[in-house]
Length: 94
Image (spheres, rainbow, N blue to C red):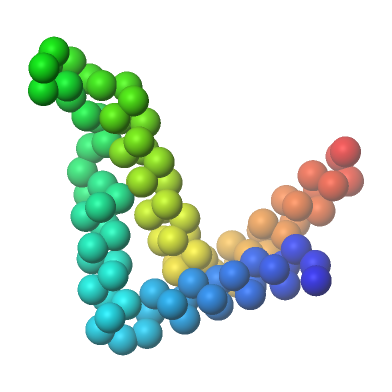
């Protein structure tokens, strides 16, 4: 299976899981909250009152998961084509 086929298959799978019915909407709403989709990932220490880099990194990791899900749900065919072209160029330049 080539690169483009893998990306198309993965996009189809994400869409099937996250865009089918009310349960998918409930899960996405929960993930948006859990993954800080609409909030800052800067976390403050309640004891010291300064940014906690470990807690902030953990929140950034959650956000990264959210962004990956959203990228696959909203990826167009043109986006996939551009990824394929970039992949070909990267392999050629190795």
